[in-house]
Length: 168
Length: 168
DNA sequence: GAGAGATATCTCGATGTCAAGACAGTACAC
DNA sequence: GTGTACTGTCTTGACATCGAGATATCTCTC
Image (spheres, each protein chain N blue to C red):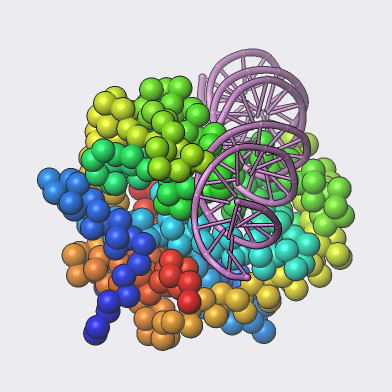
């Protein structure tokens, strides 16, 4: 391979090697790329959702409900675990989604502390359209890698992610 | 390998397959993992920097200056390109870093619109200590992968990142 | 069945970010 | 040289997030 496709992180690593030759900066090759890629993905997602009048945070909540299957209903607690945000943030998100008419809140009949949040018709339609669109764009972003490479990449990332998702 | 190490994304993909069997959700195997991993990394970094009394955003700016080499000086414009934030954010960051005594601002003698930002002694010491610490922790995060896997992962990520870093 | 601790949700204040625009200075063509 | 477009930095207002704490309810032990 004539992999001369240097990216921003290659330049960053080279700079560190000059400035701090005493340190092993190899971890940056992986982890800086993960962070930078995530930042670019956020921007791409924002652009994709704009066509459906959705913010990324709205999409995150709506897809969690959509994935739950009928009746598309989850507790705020389940939602915050799915989206990695704090409880205060989730309360705020649900408030605004309810105001926009995308979700509906009702008291949990089984637990009087609890609440259940469910998709409305318009919320369901909106998230389905946005999700199809997102997948189309993500497919394009990955077009630089063949199916084998994609699977290899997914497997490597899974290894890194596992300790976070299932704490020891 | 008994690769049964299902993570949160495997569950997410399985749920989508059930709910939207009409869609090809393979891209999520890669891109959802990138986003989720980045979120976990942010938290880990925040914890690491807390010991050095630095916020992640402070670290980002200080390392950009550190990497520049002596005299550790860059313009705000160069800094915002290095950190992927907007100009308003960078002005705010420099203000607070200057107030904290980590950087210093001076007018650019070559361009009267411009400003140059440089590390102070304490800024330099702080960033060097925090960076060593960060690398130690990142090294541990990657301990689940051998050197070959790490290189493979880095190469695959580079391919995805290249189109963003060097727009065609 | 009473009490202690855990759990679920919400409230509130502080903060970092962005987007849009203001302003000063520079560069280049004519 | 003058005018126009561009560049670099800063200002402002809106907003989403977090963290800590408040409140209500549940659960488990004795």
